Length: 436
Image (cartoon, rainbow, N blue to C red; front, side, top):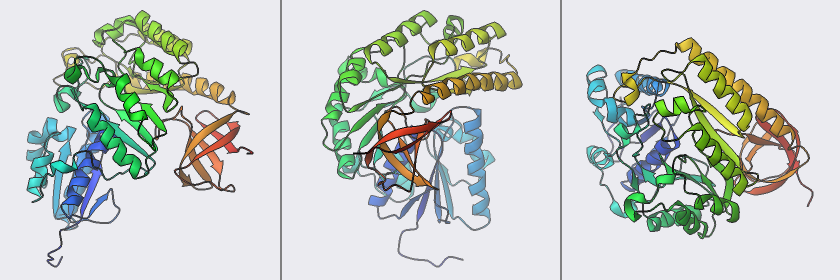
């Protein structure tokens, strides 16, 4: 049994889901710390209070979130935890329902209820801390959320239900946040939003992503700016010129395309055809030679026939994406697609997803083999076993290829290094520091 203390109890924050949730947890942790709480992130040690920041995007993510909540609910029953609070997308969408099924949770909070969560913990929401975060990533890179919510009508997506309408953060606020991060040692900014390319339309009445990139690139100490989650329909082409000409912008673009057939894109309500998609990809590669295009695809959307899938496979082979991931379609209530029959069996979805990734593995292997003998500037992320783990400008943390460098050499985590690729497999390459 714990003895009472005047000191505020330690809080362990557990984050599930995407980088946008990581950002939200970091903001919450900064507020808690300013209120004199000792805050840890995903600590192995027991803490009296646990806050779980959940994901509710697709079935697998929801299952992981519920299992995590149940695990801490059991810990509370066993006396290892005093309070369990749940926030984030799953809580926003299903909090009322789940509160009846998991009564051990003390309170449930939506995606925009940080002030209420803090009040529950007898903490003040400090407006002067807006933009401040306690980083959960290594100090040398950080996610920068430039907007919240989404106005897109995609048939499969429940994010607008959980995050609301698109709301851009003003450029001056983002520049101030970037300056704070750079002062603490951040060298790479990873720009995130539900839809980067919509940035600015709500507050400036025009797309202002290129202007934001230029402003961020003037922040002293920031060396790399990386773009994630660009929407293809209505893509602002001035952004491509910024990627091409601005030395601080990585030649990298994460642009989730979701499918490669006009029929399925129309069913998904993506506002674009295969032909327009192909034109955009050609424009991207023509304007920015050598760019790494990362995309994600949805497999098994309602109505996807074997013929549709064969066309998708051919399209993936044709486009030769540098980076690619897949999601198996998840039938989400309250979305447009929920009115359709989820008619692709689970085992077929899994088989198709595996087939796409097998194609991509071959593409990635061939591209990596062509890197052998070439030199690259890399950012060293961490030490793992006998290797430094680093990344080129063509790779984002956690989801893309890694550059492995033997610890026989001396490098510093968080520094840039010039290396030569000496070997490669499908998703990783091996390198040695270049002779200076």
